[in-house]
Length: 289
Image (cartoon, rainbow, N blue to C red):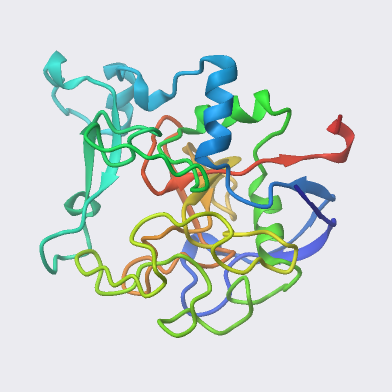
């Protein structure tokens, strides 16, 4: 872990890519804390499972009563045979598609989980890659075992900025490009043309790109990261039924989401796993062993 000094910073959107939920920009103070220098890896998660026997959300049969909360009202109950363990997997489209419906490139894949990121017919034995297909509950369980916790949204953004307050990106104001490779992002036309100029089609091994000013790797790109907070509107402070995720992933690109920024926010259901979603942990000084 690396030490993140406390301080005050401007939390919120910077630059033309900023979205409405990143405003208003507001001053926030955070206390110092320790943060994992990388996303939790497959190897680390393996040790957790071996020590505890933990079974992730994606490895359990989903409960219809929970699923229906995430679906439009009136969605008919599916056949029991469809309620099987699985998770959400990205699949490139065959060609250009309208970018107004994520269901064109995301699908529920039975048998997809942290051991099988693309589904049951494939497996991963890459211990230095970030673990994916972990729900918020899975991440909290790991943190509890490791005597750590998830970062708050403010802690995460403060750490991501690496001491560069008010900058568009974690490294400054120059946007990423095919010649300015700062993180594991999408190159090519989204979501059908993947041109891995950076060398990675999906996830990359942690530490594949330079760290930020605090010595943290992959705070931008590679995989989204769970935060402790419920997603809230900055102005109304009204909580949602979803948890905050931060940092963008290997799918981020300027054509669709441009979430390769410290202030970019998204949210998802805490019982959802995806093959571009992981986490890292923090520790407050008062809770150090």
